[in-house]
Image 1 (spheres, rainbow, N blue to C red):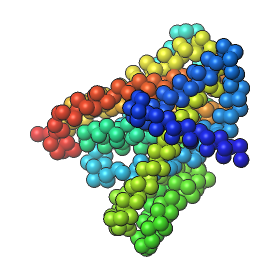
Image 2: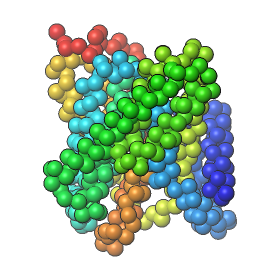
Image 3: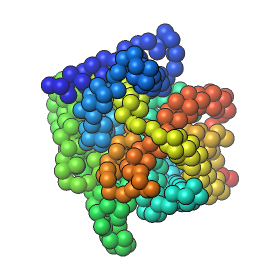
Image 4: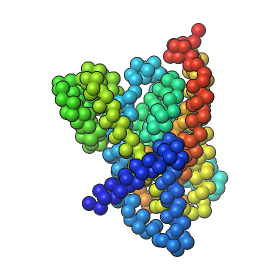
Length: 430
């Protein structure tokens, strides 16, 4: 019951911070909860160092009970991706499929290798040589933009439709693709996998294609089941089975649960919503999944902020954090500008598209969970555990992403709304 009590009290804190936000900061809820949790973490650490109240040992025992890695990667991720994809307009997604595909696949690969190469060069420069495969591993875990962080902010700010669908679509699909890339490099780094093209292709096929196929099957099955009943409560319960049993099945089968949830969510949100739900049921569906998404988002970003308590920061760690922020931002700029340099030859885009995509490429709990999945004690760099270094650097990037980028992207989006979108944005320019 201790895990349940911990979960319950932390959820209450997240809701309370959200309540205070409407009277104090009045910021986007995700940013406010993360900032509040970060301030709470600093207070706990400060009180401990001053000898007033020693809460560090208590927090060190309490927070790991929830196990952020398993909680997100094997549980909450399914709910949040399914909820996010329910609101994706399939027609708009089709119109932007080339852009989203390039950003989610090519952009993620560009970012992964750019981060890996820049990090490898930086560590060599400061006298901490690291094998390139470990640098690429960090590139893989930090490159996908986190849909949980991105969607929460983009939705509330009402970005231009063309830009919004690109940001939302990329964040949902590059999440699944990024996890697959991470799994491939992880296998090469820690499991002695063969770095051969057939081996990599097979792993990609099983993870990515398997996830898409499973998502189609789950979406098709539950579309039929929901259309076969008129009971409002049963319809909602059937949607709840998808990110619970469906996501668990994907994990058991060894395919991408993230992609399976995105595909099934798009099916339910675009086809089942119109054919299987009445107008009243559609309203209930939206309310149910909006509340679920807000609740889990609040809890997740509270945990991100409180995670600082569990990190024993050394002087070199701060340099790593700053270096990681600059490296990731530079790689993100390359991952966006390279595909759009090609695309702009054939299509017209909103003038703020690239700027919003670059600065709005937020990282969140997903990157932190992937970093925590790196085994401790496997590799050391001048006496420091590789896992610790990568977790520290990831945490610095995530905090900067949510607090700084998340809080400063609003003026950019507001300015973008004053400029008309290009007509027939998905058509070739004449």
